[in-house]
Length: 63
Image (tube, rainbow, N blue to C red; front, side, top):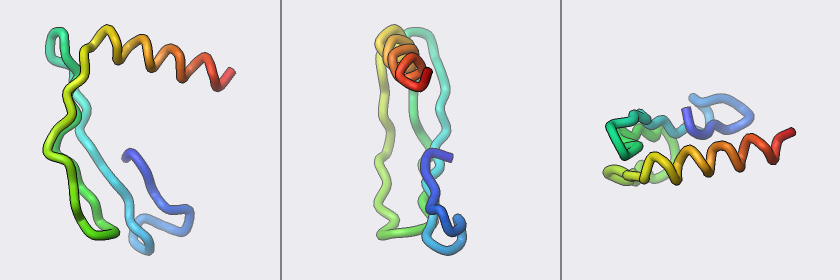
């Protein structure tokens, strides 16, 4: 789950995505949205090294 409303997923909706690593890329696919207008991206593809660096940066910000 990428995001959900504070009330509940059945009330205001939530967004789901499948994240998988394939070689030098990270893919976000198979989006689901049970709220809002239902518009969804087809796929995002990221460079795996850049993705890992951004995850590390975000994790360090939470410390």
